[in-house]
Amino acid sequence: QVQLVESGGGSVQTGGSLTLTCEASGYTNADYYWGWFRQAPGQEREGVAAIDVDGSSTYADSVQGRFNISKDSAKNTLYLQMNVLNPDDTAMYYCAADPKYRYSDTWMFLKWMPAGRYRGQGTQVTVSS
Image (cartoon, rainbow, N blue to C red; front, side, top):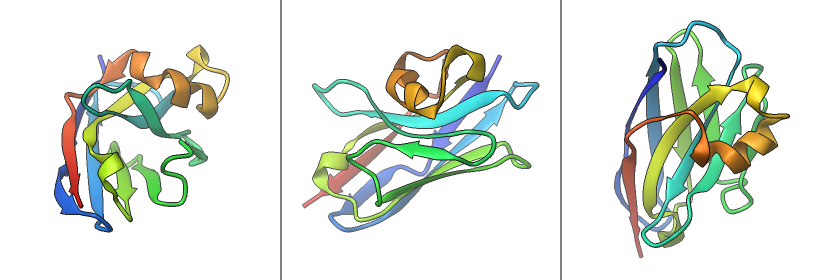
Protein backbone atom coordinates (compact mmCIF):
# COMPACT_ATOMS: atom_id res chain seq x y z
CA GLN A 1 0.00 0.00 0.00
CA VAL A 2 1.52 3.27 -1.16
CA GLN A 3 1.42 6.04 1.41
CA LEU A 4 1.99 9.68 0.47
CA VAL A 5 2.51 12.58 2.85
CA GLU A 6 2.67 16.15 1.57
CA SER A 7 4.23 19.19 3.22
CA GLY A 8 5.44 22.65 2.31
CA GLY A 9 2.21 24.49 1.68
CA GLY A 10 1.60 27.94 3.05
CA SER A 11 0.63 31.51 2.28
CA VAL A 12 2.62 33.70 -0.09
CA GLN A 13 2.10 36.89 -2.02
CA THR A 14 1.74 37.12 -5.76
CA GLY A 15 5.07 36.50 -7.45
CA GLY A 16 6.36 34.38 -4.59
CA SER A 17 7.60 30.81 -4.57
CA LEU A 18 6.94 27.63 -2.62
CA THR A 19 8.29 24.10 -2.77
CA LEU A 20 5.98 21.23 -1.95
CA THR A 21 7.35 17.91 -0.75
CA CYS A 22 5.78 14.47 -0.86
CA GLU A 23 7.31 11.59 1.06
CA ALA A 24 6.37 8.18 -0.31
CA SER A 25 6.48 4.75 1.26
CA GLY A 26 5.02 1.31 0.83
CA TYR A 27 5.74 0.63 -2.84
CA THR A 28 8.07 -2.13 -3.94
CA ASN A 29 8.89 -1.34 -7.57
CA ALA A 30 9.69 1.65 -9.72
CA ASP A 31 6.93 1.29 -12.33
CA TYR A 32 4.85 4.19 -11.12
CA TYR A 33 3.97 7.59 -12.46
CA TRP A 34 4.14 10.37 -9.87
CA GLY A 35 2.51 13.74 -9.86
CA TRP A 36 0.65 16.61 -8.28
CA PHE A 37 -2.92 17.74 -8.71
CA ARG A 38 -4.86 20.55 -7.09
CA GLN A 39 -8.39 21.53 -6.20
CA ALA A 40 -9.55 25.06 -5.60
CA PRO A 41 -12.82 25.77 -3.76
CA GLY A 42 -15.75 25.12 -6.08
CA GLN A 43 -13.48 23.92 -8.88
CA GLU A 44 -12.74 20.59 -10.50
CA ARG A 45 -9.57 18.77 -9.58
CA GLU A 46 -6.77 19.62 -12.01
CA GLY A 47 -3.65 17.66 -12.80
CA VAL A 48 -0.70 20.04 -12.43
CA ALA A 49 2.46 18.05 -13.16
CA ALA A 50 3.47 14.46 -13.74
CA ILE A 51 6.83 12.69 -13.89
CA ASP A 52 8.07 9.34 -15.15
CA VAL A 53 10.82 7.28 -13.56
CA ASP A 54 13.23 8.44 -16.27
CA GLY A 55 12.63 12.05 -15.21
CA SER A 56 10.52 13.07 -18.19
CA SER A 57 7.71 15.38 -17.10
CA THR A 58 4.43 16.87 -18.25
CA TYR A 59 2.72 20.05 -17.07
CA ALA A 60 -0.68 21.64 -17.28
CA ASP A 61 -0.70 24.68 -19.55
CA SER A 62 -1.63 26.87 -16.58
CA VAL A 63 1.67 26.15 -14.81
CA GLN A 64 4.04 25.45 -17.72
CA GLY A 65 7.22 27.46 -17.28
CA ARG A 66 6.48 28.33 -13.64
CA PHE A 67 6.36 24.96 -11.89
CA ASN A 68 8.97 22.23 -11.85
CA ILE A 69 8.40 18.64 -10.73
CA SER A 70 11.25 16.42 -9.63
CA LYS A 71 11.80 13.18 -7.76
CA ASP A 72 14.62 11.96 -5.58
CA SER A 73 14.34 8.19 -5.90
CA ALA A 74 16.96 7.58 -3.22
CA LYS A 75 14.83 9.49 -0.71
CA ASN A 76 11.47 8.36 -2.12
CA THR A 77 10.50 12.01 -2.23
CA LEU A 78 8.61 14.01 -4.84
CA TYR A 79 8.90 17.78 -5.14
CA LEU A 80 6.98 20.58 -6.79
CA GLN A 81 8.86 23.85 -7.11
CA MET A 82 6.31 26.61 -7.72
CA ASN A 83 7.47 30.03 -8.94
CA VAL A 84 5.74 33.26 -9.93
CA LEU A 85 2.66 32.24 -8.00
CA ASN A 86 -0.61 34.07 -8.53
CA PRO A 87 -4.01 33.94 -6.82
CA ASP A 88 -5.28 31.43 -9.40
CA ASP A 89 -2.79 28.94 -7.95
CA THR A 90 -4.60 28.99 -4.61
CA ALA A 91 -5.77 25.43 -3.93
CA MET A 92 -5.26 22.27 -1.96
CA TYR A 93 -2.38 20.42 -3.57
CA TYR A 94 -2.22 16.62 -3.56
CA CYS A 95 0.58 14.22 -4.32
CA ALA A 96 -0.42 11.21 -6.42
CA ALA A 97 1.03 7.96 -7.69
CA ASP A 98 -0.25 5.12 -9.84
CA PRO A 99 1.15 2.08 -11.64
CA LYS A 100 2.28 2.98 -15.14
CA TYR A 101 0.45 0.10 -16.83
CA ARG A 102 -2.83 1.92 -16.22
CA TYR A 103 -1.82 4.80 -18.53
CA SER A 104 -0.36 5.22 -22.00
CA ASP A 105 1.97 8.07 -21.01
CA THR A 106 2.40 10.97 -18.56
CA TRP A 107 -0.11 13.07 -20.49
CA MET A 108 -2.81 10.54 -19.76
CA PHE A 109 -1.73 10.30 -16.12
CA LEU A 110 -1.85 14.10 -15.83
CA LYS A 111 -5.45 14.05 -17.02
CA TRP A 112 -6.65 11.14 -14.89
CA MET A 113 -4.43 11.61 -11.85
CA PRO A 114 -7.17 12.93 -9.55
CA ALA A 115 -8.99 9.62 -9.96
CA GLY A 116 -5.86 7.56 -9.46
CA ARG A 117 -5.24 4.87 -6.92
CA TYR A 118 -2.95 6.65 -4.46
CA ARG A 119 -2.99 10.19 -3.12
CA GLY A 120 -1.98 12.09 -0.01
CA GLN A 121 -4.06 14.18 2.34
CA GLY A 122 -3.10 17.43 0.67
CA THR A 123 -1.34 20.66 1.60
CA GLN A 124 -2.92 24.09 1.27
CA VAL A 125 -1.37 26.80 -0.89
CA THR A 126 -2.78 30.31 -0.63
CA VAL A 127 -1.57 33.15 -2.83
CA SER A 128 -2.66 36.67 -1.97
CA SER A 129 -2.64 39.64 -4.31
